[in-house]
Amino acid sequence: MALVRFVNSNKSPFAVEVKKGVSILNAAFSSFIEINHNCGGVCACVSCRVNILKGKEFLNKKSLLEKKQLESGGFFDEKTRLACTAIVMSNSKKNEIIVEVPPQEEIGNLTINEFREFLLK
Image 1 (cartoon, rainbow, N blue to C red):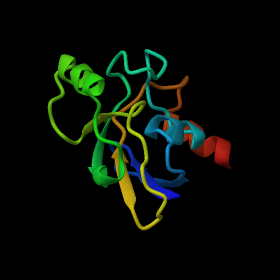
Image 2 (image 1 turned 30 degrees about the vertical axis):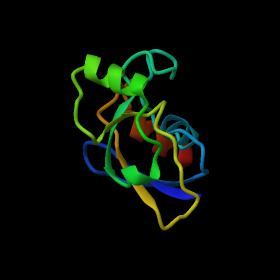
Image 3 (image 1 turned 135 degrees about the vertical axis):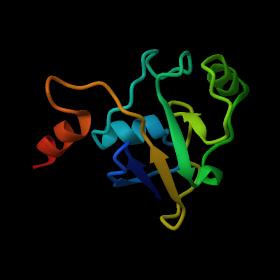
Image 4 (image 1 turned 45 degrees about the horizontal axis):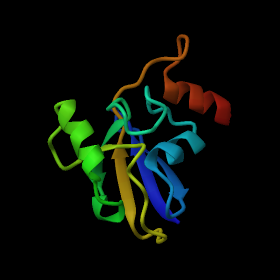
């Protein structure tokens, strides 16, 4: 299992162990970390975009479809990925992947991270 560390705009880290073959989007869901996915996670929009701050070499390479989707949304840099298509390709905890999650919508009056912390108490 690889170690995926999610950080938000406040840089609050949350680490989770992820099996090889799991998408960043599914890893986030299993950890109660909200990442928008307006198309349902099928690479038909750019709402699930994240920034890979470290460990991009431990993910699959961008597909042509992912590149086209990102470019259509104005995202041309190498660190930006779609969480629905970014797949963990490592089984080693030594291979850390740091994923920056842009600010997400709120649930009621709680942010997603506050909601997650409430559930984990």
